[in-house]
Length: 640
Image (cartoon, rainbow, N blue to C red):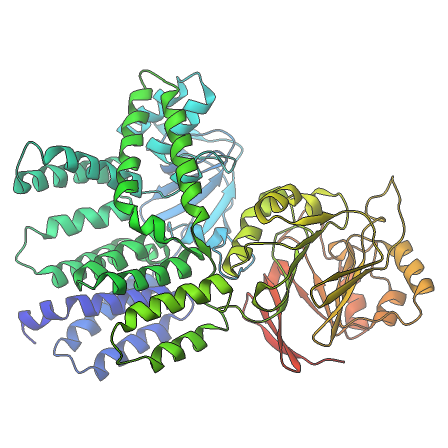
């Protein structure tokens, strides 16, 4: 094994270590073993070096323990929480009082593991936190400042509090310090942490090229990036860019430089491999490295967009060189507003936000990760060897994306929206989409993310079972964004596409909206579904009197599994194959109630809960229904 072979295989080994990092958390030994086997089978001369890397990474990750600490440096501040760091340990602290960045604080709390209900296609809060190296959280009533902040970030944060205009203050905090609120709808286009800092160097480099040569310009940008990396506490995207630029001063070639940068970032921040920003940076460099043709790069890019963001935007790809410097320009404008606040910043951000909204109009929603992907790959394989294959593959991809061919199956999905209801009824190829309830307002991002992943651009019918916030919370948004026809009142029978829906409840109680819930019965692919909203035991008694043959295969338990419904008589009559609870994880109400779960056991009724199982999908196949949950449970449901 020579130094030359080590350098030659550096990129290959770094990518294998990245794959190992992706799966290490769930399968530590298996991921290490698979990487070693792959490296051995390829018979590379530097296999021993790969084995050493695997061992070092394994020891670093496997022996890493989450020790409890009560004092740390504040590295991130949001409107409802902050992140404190002590050595390599990071802790999420829920607090209503924002500490200064880079100050050292002490606190008293008992940390708990951050857990979230699993989701299809979207990232959970726990996954987002893990990509920042945070696995535990706690709520604190207060904290004591052990060492005041003396950093540039702390100084900038203090200056923002002196801005009287609240809107300008929020924008400056968001742009300069990545401090944002969940309610910052205006600046949705700025939610790409790290890229605004790269935009700064892009702007300065564009200006410097008129005054100095490339060599001196690269030196200035390298020094600037190094300063920003230190000031902003080593953001991974900017650090990666800095290391890659710094490695340009070494005798390594482009492949070796990229491999060295990937290894460096992974060993410094192993969790960064779960960040979409890091993945984009690595893939961007890889695509540039191999000097692909335009159609080849574009095909790779649309695949990456579709997998990571469940949306493909060719226009943004074409305009990326124009969009990136805008981040830098806005950063300089925000810096100016620290000393002389001007409304021009608000106008500029609004224009930029509207511009990105316009580009989204030309984007195609949808993830390639669907039942239609094998068909697409087979069609591309058939075209193998033909001229312009990548051009044809790109056109075919866009056709699949636009027509919904990546998700051709009909389905009924109980979408995980926390403590609330949202049930999607989708006919093949998005030919007709019906949504029953929309969850709370805070759950709209999750709901929209799932609809977007399936390539849904229109909701044909939105049924609102009743007016409670956890069912009706996003009705107006869904109506505006998807052009949905909204029905809130009781109805007898509705026909949409091949689907016929019946509302079995006729009670209108002005004082009790739960009792007035629509109770929707429909059949699909041989299974009968009953969606009961928030009805109670009295409603169930009425239904049993009015419908002697009431039966269903899939029952959505009323009121999130509350003991005010799902009585023995109702369960005995309906006798479902599966009962579904739509509730939030560790919710305040204690849903589902233990008594209800005991009744299900007594009647031998299987149950699933979105709080534990995440999204619950029932896919319609010929003569059979496939049950799939976000926590990887599967089953077969046969028509009765």
